[in-house]
Structures are given as structure tokens and as C-alpha cells.
Length: 71
Image 1 (tube, rainbow, N blue to C red):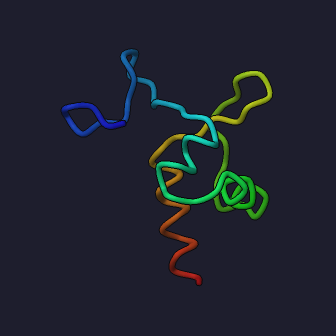
Image 2: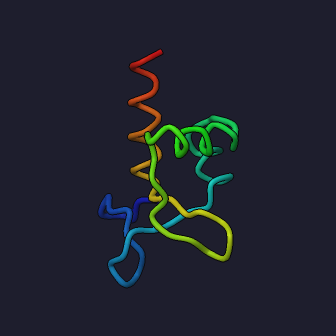
Image 3: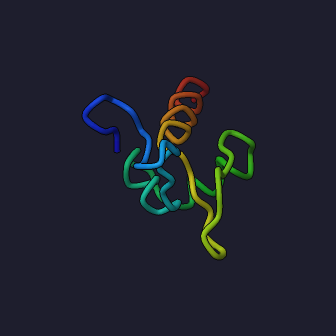
């Protein structure tokens, strides 16, 4: 979530990373859609926590916009 300055960065200046199910909820799609975007190359994970892929929220919104244009 962006901070009061409009930045999507954590306390250490690093981007905030969120797991796929939360990313899906933020853009209003099913978690399977996030996985499909990764599979199709529309979205790339920015990190991992165990087996879970983590995403930058701005990348998720960009993927959503890109896929919306092609539908």
C-alpha cells in the first residue's frame, strides 16, 4: 500500500512485496488469474517467501491494465 508520500516502499526503502492471493484481491481477480499472468509472462514475481511467490503491487496493477487492453 502506498505510504503518505505516494510511495509503495517499505521502511528500508524496498518495495513492499505481497503474496499472490492478496495481489489478486487488490486488483479484483481470482488467485488463479495471477498465476496465469505469471505463466503467460504478463507478471513476474519480485521475490519468494518459502514456496509463495511475492509481487510488487505496482507490477500487479500494470499486468491488470495490460491484460484489460487485450480483452
